[in-house]
Length: 96
View 1 (cartoon, one colour):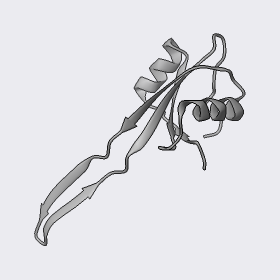
View 2 (cartoon, rainbow, N blue to C red):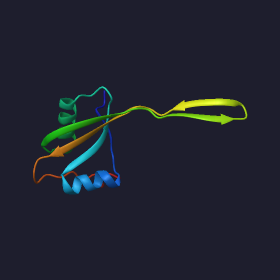
View 3 (tube, rainbow, N blue to C red):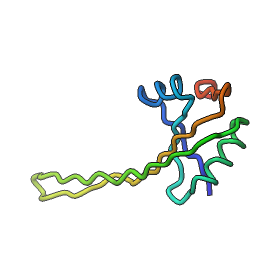
């Protein structure tokens, strides 16, 4: 089971990384905070102070088309905001 799926690079996440030294990741929905902390420390070689998690519910959409009513939804995801110790950083842009 892969814990870290991908880093989240948005304006809000970039602002958090500059001001609070916190980075956002999309993680496995079954992962807990301890597993996320160990995965980030192993992958990036940093020490993690705090982990906050967010479960994002799926969006449901309905379309009315010629063939009838179409129902669909997006996948549910879990986000983790990882706050690092003072003076440590993660460079997310090197592997792009």
